[in-house]
Length: 349
Ligand code: NAD
Image (cartoon, rainbow, N blue to C red; front, side, top):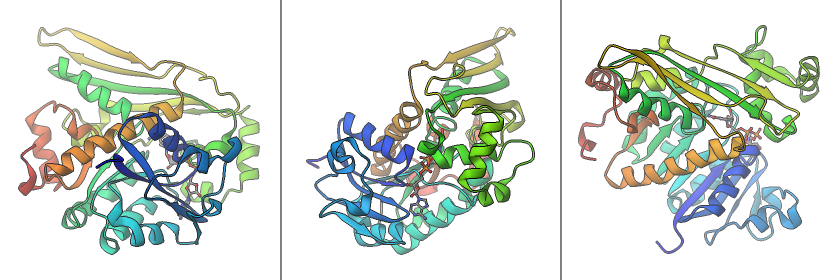
């Protein structure tokens, strides 16, 4: 392959465009396609940052000269027409309603010639649960789908999975994130989905809220969203990987929607008992200068490359990011197998 892995990004908002930047700075990746709700752009020779942002201004995909196509069914049209010329896909779509990813993935697997790797940065436990039954469909269509490849779940979850290896028993895993964005409109889906976890809100209510109403809610909170005990897929992902029961995992954070500076440092704290019987913690602190793009798109980029490596070994179906880290116990392996997560024909990594 002369131009590196051929990557498509579904979703061209904050993280989709962040991934375009990330790919341009990593070696061995060529961004060939991007899709959003108004259309897509496809160039087998590569979509440059200059094409996506002429004169530093964001260009709508369907208006990119020569390569843009306007269509209300962009994902379907892109993947049906060009799926066989794409190696890996980053899903940077909103996940409202909660089954949007599951439906989109099923469509791609069953109706297009795509046979590569897909990774997501999904956040909700429920969303990941809805993906599990797609294992066979993905495998039959020669697709490897790795879920939970963003920051949390993703970067921070896999750090917890590796840190757990020092212990003989896990007591608690806590992920606490600090996120700063200058303007919530840069990351509409991300901020909307954060609202789901606040008292008095649920998916239906958030989906029905206008941007103006979101703005008013943010105004009441001075732009800050404090999140505690979130329904976050780090729990199911670490449980399926055999690290610990999901009841031992907590996720929360503080999001400042008016300031690019993080309001607090992001940490992963893994508490466990050593082989000598001592209770202690590992604490990992994420660099404050890193942004959401660094910590979501960077790991997702790495998981795409890892996914292609595993796919080349014949691994297909549905996997989680933590599952391809060291396992904590063989019991976890049995749990994953009972969830039909293991492909018997593809165990020889
Ligand atoms: P965004 O709102 O900025 O962008 C969403 C994009 O999806 C837009 O370009 C929109 O046009 C496109 N889109 C919407 N519906 C579509 C459709 N039917 N067909 C094609 N395109 C469609 O979103 P964002 O803030 O970049 O977030 C993207 C995702 O990343 C969200 O699901 C968010 O929860 C997730 N996220 C994960 C993490 C993590 O650490 N795991 C962190 C932040 C965000």
